[in-house]
Structure formats: C-alpha cells, structure tokens
Image 1 (tube, helix red, strand yellow):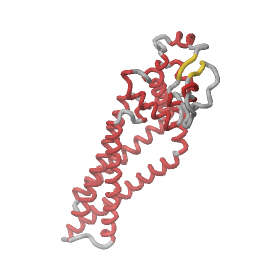
Image 2: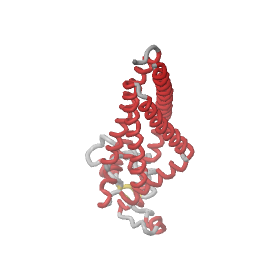
Image 3: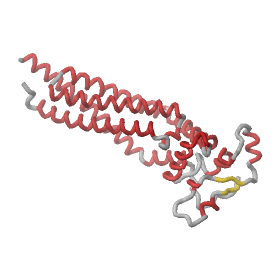
Image 4: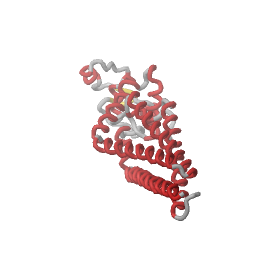
Length: 268
C-alpha cells in the first residue's frame, strides 16, 4: 500500500529535490572532468598541478556522491524502501558535512590561501611563462590576462624579472641589479582590446621602473581575481546557504518517509 496524505506530498517533493540534486551532481561531475582534461583551464594557474588535481578529484568525488544520493533518494521514494532512504540520508549527510568542513577551513585559512595563490601565480609568470616545456601554462595565462583584463601577478612589473625576458633566476641579487635602467617586454595578452595596428607591439616594451603605458592593463591578475570574488561574495554565500538548507530539508523528508514506511509495515 502506498503512502497517503501528507506523506504523499512529501514523496513528490522528495522526487523534485532529488531531480535537482541529480542535475547539480551531474554538473559537478562534468565540470570536474572538463577541468581535469583541459590543461588551459584558468584555475590551474592558482596552485601547483598536484594540489590542483587533488582538489579536482575531491570535487569530482563530491559530484559522484550527490548523483548517487539522488538515485538512492528517487528510487527509495518510488519503492518506499527504508534501505534506499537510509542510504540517501547517509550520502547527503556526508556531502553536507564535507561542504561545511571545507567552508570552515577556507574561511579560517583565507589569509594563507591569498598568499598561496599569489605566490603560485607569480611563479607561473616568472618561472614558467614562455618556456617550451610549459606551453599549456603559457596559453592558460594568456587566457587569464585577456578574460580578466589584467597583467602579471601583481602588475606588469613582474615581467621584468621573468624568464620570458630571458632573465636567469638562479641569482636573485643579480636580477635586482641587472634589471635597473633596462627595457623588458610583456606578453601581447597584456594589451587592451581594440588597439590600432602596431600599437600593442609598441606598448609591450617597457622600461624598468618607468611609467606604464595606458594601452596595457595596469592591474595584477591576483588582485583582479580577489576583487571579482569580493564583488560576488554575497551571491556565492547565498547559493551555498541555499544548497545546505535544501540538503537539510531533504534529510528531514527522508527521515519522515522512512518512519512512515516503517509504521505502515507495522500496521500491515
């Protein structure tokens, strides 16, 4: 015998919630696979490849868990199965705890994360850009600069001591001395859009310590990324809270249906 009354309404709501979870989980899985297989994805610039891949595999695992939980939830509601509903409850609870723990860790270590990201992006600028063995990083950073309309990690001056300008970075003291009163080049992706012919080429050559050309982007990419996050933090926070509340509602519904199914079996 099927569930009736309020439990019947809860069943339909659970189906809708689990369809939404399935879409979210599938989106997370597809995005994770895309980021893992696309070497030019912009977020890869913010950390070392090992940390980047570990974070993506965790992200992929969460997506798979959400998708699996949605399957347990839908099937458990349709079959009125206590086992499947309990499985759904456990999976979503694990995901929710992981989300809260990750958010708390990120908030507690926000200052360290800023330093880590800044150091990693600066390393990409000074050590990896333009190197034949790091072609994917070069393409990625060009994409980053064009899309965010920025130049370098902290600004265009980062390119003065970069391997892109054939600077030997084995001796930091010599770099500081040799960089005075010399010219250096910056990538074409630092140029602003819609420039006239040859204007970008002429603007790319700068003097160390001299004024910056207005035809190139002045802001560093790290500051630009942080600025974008701060501008959208309300939306990010609202979405996160909405997802956690949805998970709490689904957990409550799952327990209610599980108790209703058990009581119905006892009556039978």
